[in-house]
Length: 99
Image 1 (spheres, rainbow, N blue to C red):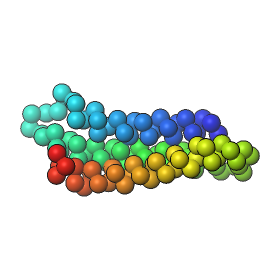
Image 2 (cartoon, rainbow, N blue to C red; image 1 turned 180 degrees about the vertical axis):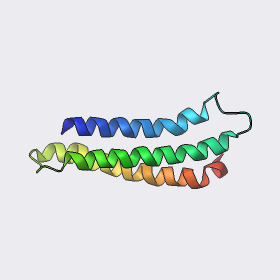
Image 3 (spheres, rainbow, N blue to C red; image 1 turned 120 degrees about the vertical axis):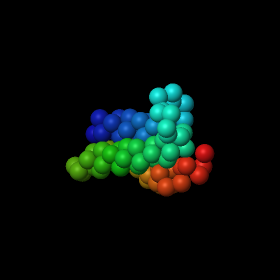
């Protein structure tokens, strides 16, 4: 079960890093703008947050044995993935206007 929490956290971290890496990237083609790539990074954030949530759900297919671990890790990570999906959707839709 801890493996699923770690993989979920790692996926959240990758999702958060996507827009940050795009903002400081030097590999963006000259024909593209930073704003359009920032907007595209929102879709990557959404994908990683969904994968993170699926990893959390996979951890709880079996009955919960240790309720403390459930409260300590599952609830905050689950809330974080939902918030990141909402933020990623906003970036995906309006990221070019944010820049």
